[in-house]
Image 1 (cartoon, rainbow, N blue to C red):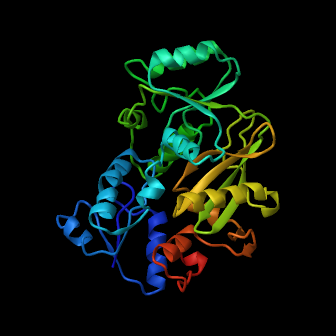
Image 2 (tube, helix red, strand yellow):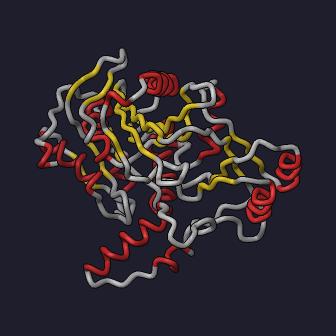
Length: 350
C-alpha cells in the first residue's frame, strides 16, 4: 500500500494529484493519509511506501521534518523524499557543506555564525561585488548583489541584530522579485474569488533568519543559468535567462527548452553528483566560473513540474538523448516503486 500526504495546508496540490492520476491509470492502490488522522501512525506502520512532497511553505516543511525521519528510520517505510535526498532542502549552508565534503564544484561561499568573525573576514575582503543570500528561499528571494564593504557591514549587523533578516528585508518598491510577483499573483487570484487576504500580516509569521550570514562569490558573465533536473539516471535541462538589468535568473520565468543550448558538461556533472550522493531526485542550478568550468550554484530536491514536463526529452546516464515529454512524477513513481512497467497517462489527463 502507498500512502500520500497532503502537501500544502493539508490539501492536495496539482503536483501531488498527478501522482494519484498516474497510479490510478496503472491500477495501483494508494491511500490518502494525513497527520491529522487520529490513526495516522497506525496506518503508517502498515505502509510500504509513503509520499510527502513538501515545499517552501513553512508549516508544511516543519510538519514533514517531524514526520519523515520517523517514517523512514523508525517504521522502516520507504519514503519519497528519503532523508538522504531532503535533509538539506531549503538550506543553502547545508548544501554547500555537503557538496564540499565530496569535492563537488559548488560556488565558493563564506559562512559565519558570529558577528566578530564575520567582521574580521570583511576587513580583509576586497573582491566585490559579492552575493548575499539567506540560507532559505527560492526564485531569487533574499538574494542581493553587494557592491562594497559598507553594504556588507550593514547586512552583517542586521543579521546578528535582534530582528535578523526576513522575507522583506531586501525587497525594493517595484522590484520584480519572487516575493513581489507572488504577492501580486495571490492578491489578484483571491480578489477574483471575492476573498480578502492580508499578505503583509502573513509575512510576519515567516521565521526570521538571524545569527548567521552567508555570502557567495559573484560569478560574472553569466547572462543565464542552466537548470538540470536529475531523476534516477535521467537528466532534463533548460536555460533560464536573467531578469532585465539583473544578475539573477531563478524565478525570472524566461525559460528556453531548446536542448541544443544545454552544455553537456552541466548534464554530466549533475548526473555524477546525483549518483555520488544517491539522490532520488534533484534540481541543480548551474553557472560558469571565471575559467569557463561548470559549477553548481544551488540545489533543490523539489521544483515546479511543468518546466520539466515541457522539456522535449532527457539525457540518460550515458548522455544519450531520449525523446519525449514526461511528467517528473511519472519517473519519481517508476523509480520509487521499482515499477519500470508503469505507463504514463495522456498528458492532457494528468
